[in-house]
Length: 61
Image (cartoon, rainbow, N blue to C red; front, side, top):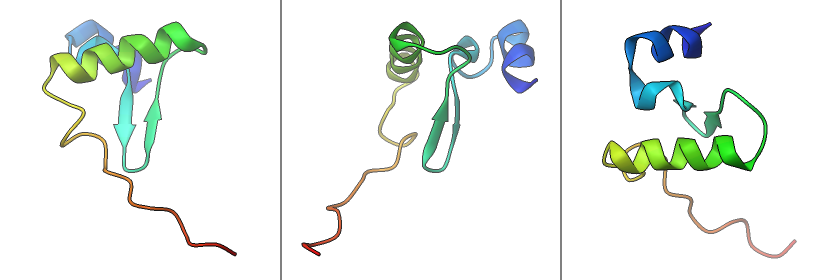
């Protein structure tokens, strides 16, 4: 598993998250895992440049 390997090597926020376009995967369920991921993103200079900016949604249906 990628997150397990990253935790051992200290890559990408110490495996607090896996980010791909339009998706952030955390290794455990719950708010505390999301907080750790956000803290790791901030510590590495993000979220700008890591998470895409979301534009306005579609107009009224």
